[in-house]
Amino acid sequence: MSFNKIVVLGAGAIGSIYGALLSKKNDVTLIGNKAHMDAVNSKGLSISGDIEETFYLKGDTEIRGIPENTLIILTTKAYDSAKAIKQIKKLLKKDTVILVLQNGLGNEEVVKRVSGDKAKILRGVTAMAAEFFEPGRVRFWTGETIIEQNEVAERIAESFANCMLKTRLFNDINLEAWNKLVMNCVVNPLSTLFHVRNCELVSDSLKTVRHRIVRECVKVAKAEGITFPKDLEKKVDEKISGYTNFSSMYQDVMKGKKTEIDFLNGKVVELGRKHNIPTPVNETLVSLTKFMEEKNGISRKN
Image (tube, rainbow, N blue to C red; front, side, top):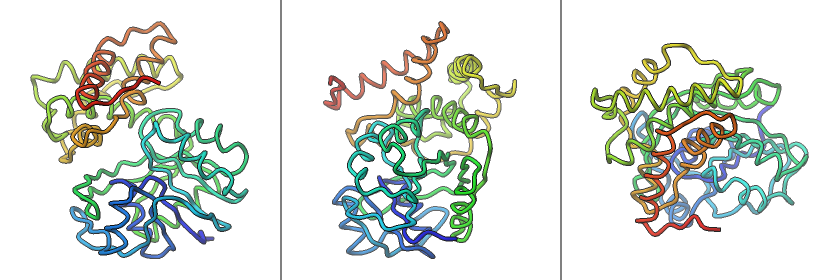
């Protein structure tokens, strides 16, 4: 059974891609910032890269109503999760499904805590990449979407597959979330510090740094009950070498926005302290990234 409505909450680069592709066979609304939504509504959403097409779908700056049998794809920044769900909590229904597709760990727990029992919450991990050029224009690199296995996930996977979105259901979604976290812990801060595309990081001069980041993540993950293959450093290098995009964190810093560092390397540092595991490289990257935020005039003081 397909969904009556699909809403992409937090339609930046990645969210816009999902919305565009799903709009081929679904009633889709993007929720994002005014400039981007105005461009989408007036001249369509232009996608380049692995797809070259303009999509005509609806955009808005807020969710004004949630029909029965609605799928909400949450692609806001991780630090905006609680705020985004609080704003729509009264509109949620028992059959509303929220698919959490964000960087970091524990995001779905935040959504569950805020929404209570008013919706069904699923965790997903995306391997797609995107760059936001300007309002109404996004560049896209294809990749699969992994969703935790259950009956609702099967409905989502069917809807995705019908729109050429490669999807895989997996019982251990925590492992997949950790896999992406490790990749992000290497790619995001380093690409941001050096102002380079992700693939440029696979340099011999950065090999020690890359691998130390991975090893710290592996030690912390093991304490959390997650086991990785022994050759993870090599696999990370191989994957990064094929990523020709600019990371989301680099894009955020270039736009003067707050980063998700607390939910990536910062989460590794947090869990490392919990288990008395030193994480000096990840901790250094957190400090360096927050310094860049400060230079952009971003304050993290509550």
